[in-house]
Image (cartoon, rainbow, N blue to C red; front, side):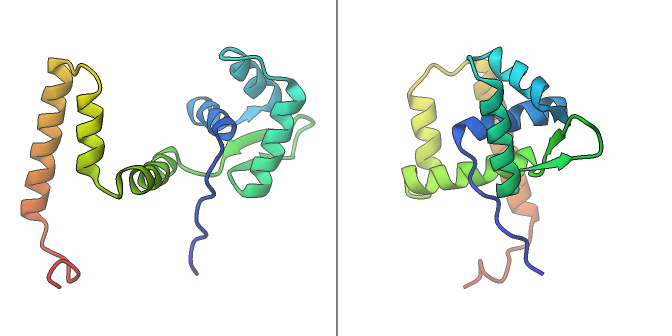
Length: 139
């Protein structure tokens, strides 16, 4: 059985997912209060968004108690990866190098960040050297 693809969340849905990823299962009131720490959002707006997200499969709802408790149905890393892949494909023609060059060229990068980037590149290089090529790579 194939897993259905993750639907692309809107900006508002991403804000709600961030709350759920950070705090775990939460009531509509809690989610709304957290959103209001960033910008003013009405309770009914938060409720409607969560209901739409439930229909899209982005959240799950526990109906056992009087107050509904929502939790993320999608993993944070998986969602970030999906959004990043789509962004890189649509904005940089699928080129990770163009993304990195743009990111590093547009702002000052600290020595610490550069050191972390070097370590990451070294780790990727080591991983590539120790991972046997797949059959797709040989074609």
